[in-house]
Length: 421
Image (tube, rainbow, N blue to C red; front, side, top):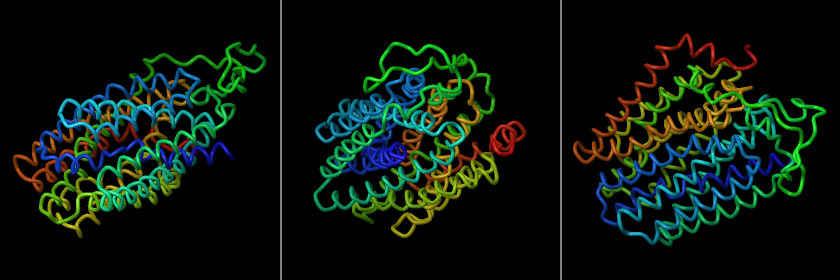
């Protein structure tokens, strides 16, 4: 129980560390006189760095037993890189700080997924990761609300201070998870160490906290198992297309409303985040139940459908009232995906010992779209205005729907919930 409570608290505080000042960076740099295409290019560079780092991070999470230490190091590095933005002015320095934050943040998702899998095993992953994501979205709500209020009251410096506070609390939560609570074979998708190699001689190298390692875990499968898994490749391609349209929409929407002098930069940006994250809490809470009833294919199909409608609404209603339907749709899509995607990866790669590197590979495919999206969105907004950019971004994401339907036969069989098999 201590491990699970600490894990959920970690997910709560990690939300602000993972996001950093990402949602605020557009209006922050806009206030410094940056153009939208310059802002988009910086965000794209950070996304590309995360794309390259994420599969390597996943492979490292699979291979290391020091998962808690890895989360601590990544948390501290990400927070420091975000804080550096407050004191940098040049394009190169801003880009470097965002690249460093993106690389540090790329470790956190596969590491948290691995620790969760090591504590609850594959059978309990869907439910527990859903609880983690509820806590994570709640952390985003609290972090964004506090950032919006402090930013309005004291300026953007308060937003950076809040990130540092959440990072410190996240580190404390990591230390509250006992090392012996994590089964390191299960954490990478193999049979547990206790079940897999009973009676074998224990290893001699000490684990964290002076404990000796348990029985040697089963051998993982070859990395080629990733490339041979067609449903995994189709999932990654669908996510890439979805996030090519999705990633730029929130910062562009905030910039568009602020540029039209229709809202306070900090308060409005915080409002967009809070609305979406509140909906994500409900979507993440419902996701395990929906997966159990309908399977992963239908749940992800619902998430793909949200973005095209969101793009049309964002183009039509760019004011304080429009933020509600636009961000509610964002919350539905992102909330369902935040649980369904990692859980489906565990399902597809169960028994291979390559679960976390697969999480990294899927996140990389997602990162390809997310990295290119700000550059695409910023360029479109600069050339055709914000409404044209929203319509184009929504149209791009229809590709995910097309792919999901074209390969429905392959995907639906692979995406069944484990109870249906």
